[in-house]
Image 1 (cartoon, rainbow, N blue to C red):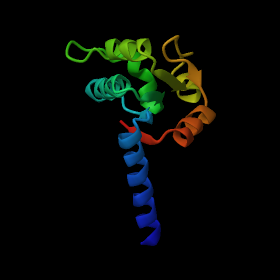
Image 2: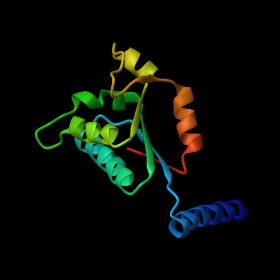
Image 3: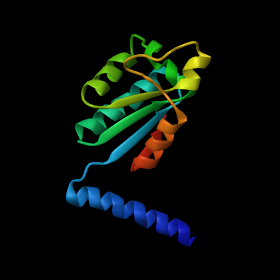
Length: 130
């Protein structure tokens, strides 16, 4: 119980520091879905956080590396991705996941490693998954 309480208090103090002192938060987004709506919303969230002044990185894992091929008439994923990159967001794509799909990545989604995913999780204040 004490460990949980300590963890909660640390998170509350970290959040309070951001609110009180206007510091930016580092947010990591891990996308492992190939559902157009889910991926579209993940990048919308990333774009919103960037607009709030936070630093945001996205790591594509598993089916998530297919995101550049998920555009539909309702959910134009690549448009959200392009906006994300254009305003300073960074995207990383799992190299092994790309190789399984006979892909080399792209300019927008460069081939990355487990080290990149580890660093993202370790360095970010908050990490969310889609």
